[in-house]
Length: 341
Image (cartoon, rainbow, N blue to C red; front, side):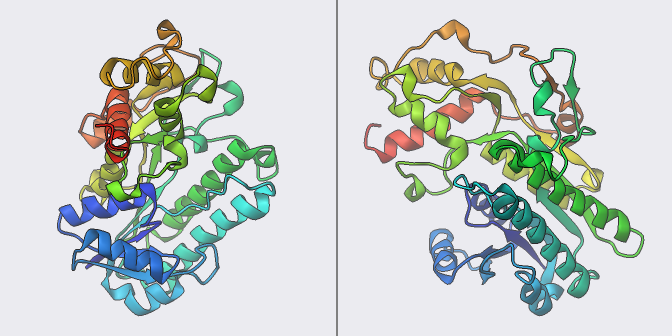
């Protein structure tokens, strides 16, 4: 039996595929084009990996043929795909509707063709689904696994960040409704993984480019900055990509994680924290990148609302890698690619 992985060619998706193969799972990867699929097979070079071409994953029939033809062989589904379009201006058309339709198509196809075979669906969500951005500066506020973004379909169209949060939230809620509606008539279980900013190296060195995936942008900017102004200000939480991938696989192996929202996040950071580690850990960068103001780093400090994922950490049972691990692992790969290490 196989694990079907959507978004398999993406930054997170490739890490998920790698860890599944490392654990001897058979994987069916969903890809947009044959070219992407062939490239994935070449990179992994593993007979337990195959792919199906779905085209645009937001089409309402994108996954139908997969489950119609191979549903009997699919035991688990990991849904990493998400229509992240940083150039979007029509948030409803370009982000909200594609995310909703992709999730609907996946769930409808499973229900129609594979409800007696699929045992677990794990979905990639995100912290924007469970925080209220308007309250992030309030020290008295705590968000946890029970929290939900308060935005409506209309209000989340105010800007890109709210649109991403809304799209992930509405897609996740579709999954929970599907689970509740079908848990008494099928054996399908459901779990969501809620990561913060995902940092870390690419699965394959060849995927290191001048412009990395969006979540690694702040580290990449800092590595190549000559002035503090070259780095976009950012205050958030982060997590190592390998930990996020691991968290997606554990629910397939642990009944205890069924029906859970799992927040994978290692704590606060800002751009100064990243500069601090780059200057401390990479002599080759010292004197070339800005120092900033080291004392302005916020790691391990309280800065407004708290994201409490203690329940998740207890359930997962493994320690998350630190911000320093995230920064150093990403930077080593970039500098080696550039011939500077």
